Length: 356
Image (cartoon, rainbow, N blue to C red; front, side, top):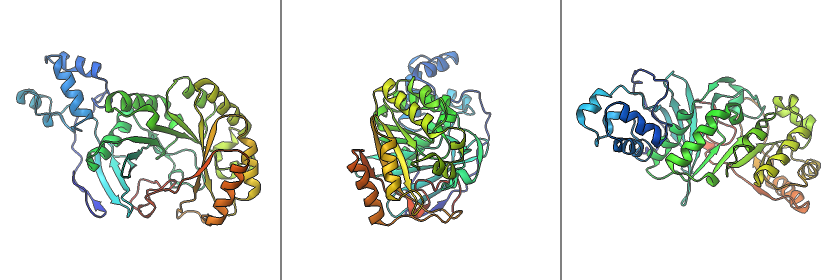
């Protein structure tokens, strides 16, 4: 796949092939070895298959030229589990937005974010999202379905192949609520770590907060960063911005976050989108500081990225700096994160599986 200097529309047809219960993508070396042996091939073919899937990015068995030609032809219709590129757009900062068409025709969005030293993929865990956050484009479109683990891994391989360089970091901050699809997310995290070769400490899973799911995620004992999308300093404000907060009150969420730190020994990152005149006032900063006292955490302040459905405003630089300084004064670790990909509608909160 070549890199294009501008947005492009890919109109290649989706190849129809029988969908198996377990696509090859997402399976471990041991499972792939068993798979080839069950089809009359020697065990070392499993390692070859593993390498071509996860390092070379093979999209079909006929592409794997180290396999006997007759067997490749025989296995031509085996489901690898890769998506089809539907649309691709590049922002001026080099961030690339991808719309990927899945085997059932649904569309998801993933984003590749390059810097000189790293390549980060912002992956989706669902098609759409049921959380309905008022400032988020994904939530405006509603929920369609969960992604399977191979559909999550495919996003990373797609970006890796397109950029022609190794993916170094992964953030589950695309479409969907990861902890509502926890089984598939955990399977994909294991595959991305063990099979693709990305370190757990280079992965982040973001959640708006689902009752008991943070505790469940903690029990997996992963070295992955947990990011909680907070976006409000009190319950009343959070309910206005995040409908699910009605079912999961802020005190209970904080209790579960404290338990997470005790169980894992890892600090939590709190994401806080700054909405001008809504949640960015000095009293909000003071409230937030009091809310987060007493356990290991770090706050990422994210200036709002605009979407067409609502008229929230991004606060000015003075207001952002003031909010940051108040948190620092109260001994809360804090940084400001300016999202990339804004011009391609690929920034935080803008993902909607459309070209607009």
